[in-house]
Image (cartoon, rainbow, N blue to C red; front, side, top):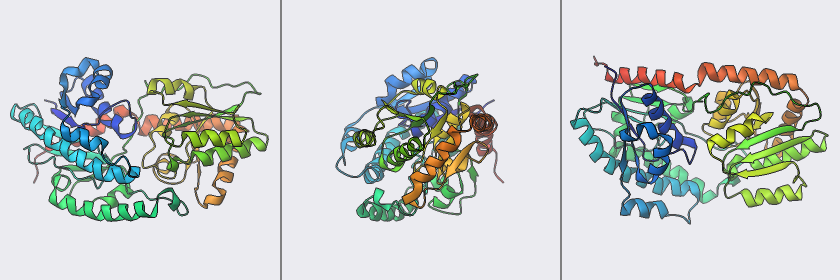
Length: 417
């Protein structure tokens, strides 16, 4: 008999991208295989999940909204994002787990759960209270332990950096008081950086598993990328418009490449607090005809833009994962990415160009050189695109991840000793 799996993730959603999409995908693919799985999510995501997971809505249970959910969701709006996320995100997760526990106990008592899987939050230091239910718990894949490259400290205030440093120490202490991760049957980490960031170094069962995956049905490679010889070289960026994504540096690089005679354009898929400043920068650099802001687009609307592009550019200086890199590779696009964080785990010289973000003063120059290299060599783009698509199929396909998870679930259930 296959194990009965419970995915626990209040923030599961297709609307926010990033880590919120991961539990949705685990549950969806397990159910599509006909395996017994349930999902616990928060009621605020019910409309989205009822649409995305319509055939399986009967297997989704919801934590109802409460006074504490509403207050914590609104609290700390005046604080920097990372500080707000650490304080109120942690408190909100603890509230969610309190409500989840009632549902979990009921399901376990009814014999409907063999294994609990908590895919998010992906932070290795986030405490978990999912223990004591009489069934094994699998947590992750987690991904974290990031720092900014040298020279980018101004992207956070000194006060925020001090707070984050103190918070990491407190989180280690909190993980002793709330021992869900220490008691978990399995901890999954995306890379060695995350393994080093765990709140303890003596857990007996830590397994490396890449956080992100690619669904070929959602990100299909177009059959032909042939372009007219006079067609512009089309770059695309996907992500939130926040400071650490360094889109301003992307625009500087684009301006340099165009000044050198390369007819390059940039489609920006995403929105965020930096958008107004970036639009002003486009105007100052007279890039208006070469840059298009699309705003936030759902996944289904992003794929056609990628299909018509020549390369993805993502030069973020704080990117633990970078699912967009894998999605672009899956569609046969070469990628210009930072030699830092998650993208450096995915890319190599066969499928993209890794550009060091240091020194900062010349980052745009190095990015411009990468743009010009790809723009002037269609054969190189084709080779890199094909290599990237093959790498995704071999290493990052979601179906392969589900196969690995089933092995991990079975291992968690295996008798010890």
